[in-house]
Image 1 (cartoon, one colour):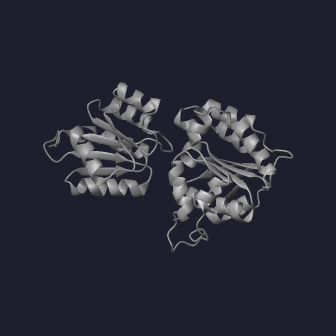
Image 2 (cartoon, chains in turn blue, brown; image 1 turned 90 degrees about the vertical axis):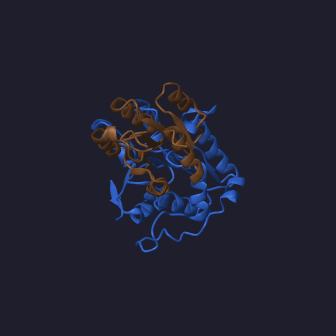
Image 3 (cartoon, chains in turn cyan, yellow; image 1 turned 60 degrees about the vertical axis):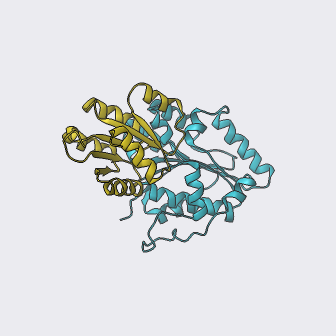
Length: 204
Length: 130
């Protein structure tokens, strides 16, 4: 397990390799915004990837605004590198299909197509259009919203801890207040099942 | 006028601190007593101890730790007469919203983003103070 401030976690994310299934536990929306804004920009601009974002506690439009304005949520005086990340041309990336943002609830529970099949297709599509791979940041809060804790564990366990020969990095995001609601055995199961566990520490 | 004879008292809950600050400011400017919370568990604890002082509860829906539907269910268990309004930036025509209305869990909804006028109107309408 790696525990640290946003900058430490971002370094870990940048070092994540294809095939890794990672769990991220964060303390608040501010920290999460910094992480997804910076990471998405790195993958879209520097890494030529497709990024799929499935937020729960923010609407897709709010996420788009944050990416567009690079609103990392930190004060200008705070000691981190994410406050000036440069804006992301959301419209351009959406148009070319390299950035997809969907409500996690709709993607998991109210979609005609199965999310796992969609991801599989996305990885294939990335290869077809010359992208290096796919990064997925999925907020698991949607399972809590419906009280589907057993389904959450089942869903997580149905995803392999490591994807072999698949150009996919998957980040399962938990708010610490949600993660703390799990039974100890479930926390342990999830921690063990993910190849990497990253815990974001709240910055004062 | 409040059930206590003074200005109406409102409990507002949203996990986004900025939103709760704005709501508190707007309502206080119109003379309401407002207690704002960003954590459902703390809001609930406070409500338990002061349930008869409140006229209206305004809650967000998607919040970590406890969602707005569970929160207002607990609020209703403590005080079934308090007026409860839900607010959300998501689609409020979803089944769970209409279900919450039909089951009398919520008295009304407020679609985010809302203007000051919309907020004051919906609060005043439900408090019958227009």
